[in-house]
Length: 496
Image (cartoon, rainbow, N blue to C red; front, side):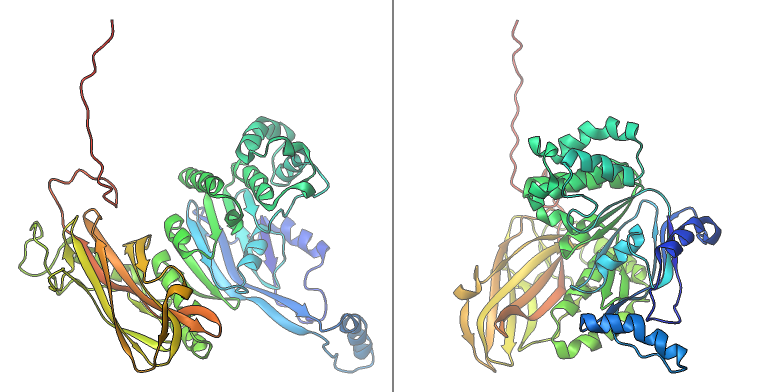
């Protein structure tokens, strides 16, 4: 599949006619510019502009008036406003890579995926893809509501490039995965939103795609179905397929993806390791409106920095503790050289977090901890404004950014600190059991309150502390968390 757009001289006219789209697709091989067979998706200088009309009358005027004005030798007038959903976006995705796309609502994520899938034409730029694409875009897109589920399976799979024989060979797998029972022979218009997603995903993953595109659709299904979907996505990844995954869940992108792309207001602000990109996204998401443009500029300015150098340095730092203390000690201690290099600090919105630190129960500062002991995470919060319904929080994450758990000072804002006065300071303490297995982990600190009738972060520090759980030669726990599993076994007597 190949789609190619170019700048248009007259924005009043349709950007791409259906004839031109077909012509461009037919000339895909001629325009192919991929330098390596290792590239599955190549997005180059992609832009998409929509014409926004205030009234239907303006749309009619735009259709007639500019042509009359040109015939009369006058400069044509424009009766619409331009909205650029995408602006000069460029990136590549390699074969077998899983890339997450994240951004605020209206950032252009869905528009980008539709152009990549070929269901929408660009205003400028080009997209080149290699291999069969299976996509889950808008809920039920590609389904005819009047057709039964069975009929839609055949129609949708045909559109994705399967022959009738291939569809029949895979139909039982599709039906089993969707698990919608007798509804498979009922019209899709009678389905719930969850049933539509089940059927759509079942078709998409059973066509053996080279490229799988998922646009937040899985959030509709129940927990059991979501787990089944993510398990299948993992299997598709292992088979060598390329995956583009759009989600508002930073934790999901960190867990599934090898790389992430941050979009905002149609622009690609940054691309890199999921943990770093999610941190930038969250900083932008919770920034005051007056600071967002400044933060956007900072993210774009820093997007070209080489993150791998920092990552290698941090890995080395975590693997080899500095100082004269031997790493194989069983005693907890503080390593002054163990400092995070990935800290992200939100813009304050009426509160500032200060002096975060881990302590023992007797008050000694620590960052090299022993498995199974209790520690205190403390920080101060200085309120620069008066804020109602305040909650404090902490979160522990892995080095890759997977959220392991944490705590909040109240389960809901209506059970929180009723009011924090301006210029007041609160000392916050969280006690936690270190049930983590040996390794390196990160801590977040946050404070939330009500502003403009909504609960929001007043201040947040991401990766503000890195700590290490010391090795234990007697440790038999596996994985990340020690659940205190106890084993027992005995020799069984064989029955004659």
